[in-house]
Image 1 (cartoon, helix red, strand yellow):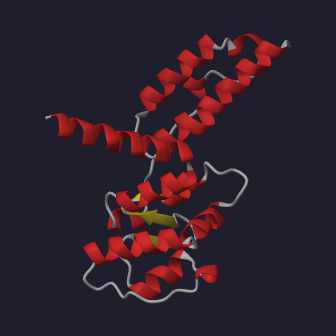
Image 2: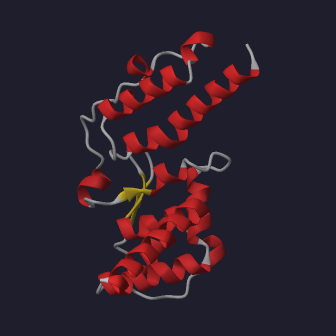
Amino acid sequence: MDKSAIQNQLQYIIAKEQYMKPLLENEIITEEVYNEVLENLYEEFEVWRYSRIQNPSVEFRKKKREVRNDLLEQNPGYISLTELARSKPQKSTGYTIQMWLRDSGTVDFLSLWEKKHNEKFLPILVELNTLTPKIWIKETNSIGIASRQGKNGGTYAHREIAMHFMCWLSAEMMLNVIEKYLEVMNYEKDN
């Protein structure tokens, strides 16, 4: 197998695992769109020619969710930080979320968000080096983050908080948010 064939396979796998799967799992795109894009990439990169990588239209079938996740039912519109944290493969998802939560800028942001949206928020001094989602929720009476261990568990957050987490995870995402904000500000200034 030549170098370009290996590069094509790697590009296909990266596109699938880092970009397409999270979009599908977070229900941003449908299974049909997922399969269509992957089939196009499969053909474009000619993965079939040199590899045993199966055609994507038969590889991934979204599991039926017979039992809906309780956290999502209780908190509609919340986004899974656990799923977002999977983009950092070198660390466990729980560790990634804890590192974000232990950042003083994150605690300041969460406190500001809770004060704005939660009348029962209890502003307290937190021990940053031991802070976990469960401790944050219990000690502050937080409504912006929900967390549960075990099957169908994970850490979920309001979309504004999830955006903060995504910007912390990815400098590219932070740059995109800043550029979009400036674009909107310039548009409003011109009109």
